[in-house]
Image (cartoon, rainbow, N blue to C red; front, side, top):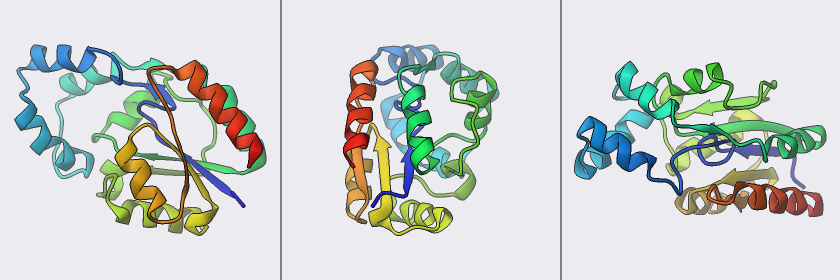
Length: 182
């Protein structure tokens, strides 16, 4: 039985760079190379590096509300506890909330990688999420847009849904239907 649902933020609860050229624009504007970012981002998500406010704004200003999932989150919230499990840069989650990009609801749990010092797909962040929610992995349903993070959650017995941020309306509809069948 599912008693807790975790949602990823970027690409699920809100629309990030997935399926767009926005990341290419930011890289060009800031002179960021793939090699640099591949090394820097894991440290950033784990809170071991900092990001400038200007670069943080360059990201957050390009994110969009995913209105199609908000009613689904509300339906799920009526049936079980919900939380956010997200790999964020330091200060990003607060900036996202301030812009109103995620629903203003009382999440039961929020696991922000930059705060806890762990990032997906590290199994330790999923174990922390289990402990914080107070439920076993097989009672957790995880909505995520990254296949590697889905695989990591499944390896711990979590039930999962791979969300497609390129087609959010269709994906939200499938999620709603899928959750009703559980």
